[in-house]
Image (cartoon, rainbow, N blue to C red; front, side, top):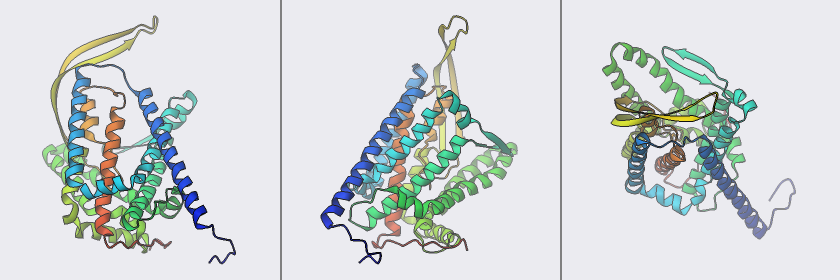
Length: 369
């Protein structure tokens, strides 16, 4: 009964209301994906040469490896996604909002406002903050809260997923932001002295960068869901998240290791290619294309935090940079979507182990201490 005296909806009306709500968010997700594709086409560079062919081969190899990993190592997670396809609704929404900001950056008046950034450097570690980056942080924090809540619903109940994100964002945004901030800030803070070591002893620095990326991700694999759904204070839930991660690492270490590899913790690039340079004559407006034969050999070690749905694979971005390939139409977006699917599967894998007894934790509003 409702103490307020409001008359509850009949069962049929409630079910109809939930179905309509789900349908609206599915449509919004599809619209978001359309924006995502349009934004990719607007920012792409339509120049093709040997460098672009190499990048296509890299993308093909990464795609095959990722799909194989999903099939072989993430079977329960993939099965859950197939059964509860609504889990992917937030993906279309967040990509659509991400693309909308990118499209707004093409508008002359808004471009300056969105991209004008203040830059600070600490021992070689550059930090750029702009209006667009702050918007991205806010949007992806909302996504982390919403997506993680939907995963918990899918794991702990057979009821239809409640797709409206407002309740998830209201309850979990602060805890999601805290988790994401700690995951990234600690890694950046430890990276500062490592970069100083790289300046005098590069081999040792590379080893430390790799160790940081592996150790910190092992320590925080369960941080985000634990902090979000714990009934303890934020400080105590962070400690609990670290403990859950270390105690259960044996249950998901292989999946975590594969995710780190596919996101590019180690990247080796070598090959010959033709660099294509387009120049425009300012007086005649004629476009000329110059091509140069080049070769590149490079090895890079990256350190990043995967606990916040990281989906930028350095295997693509670093290869594109080394081969001077430019932005291929839909290439980065397609591989980014696949990597986000991998991140969701990883989060499902972790949360199935944490909440496998089918008991949904109840988060309450508590103080920092």
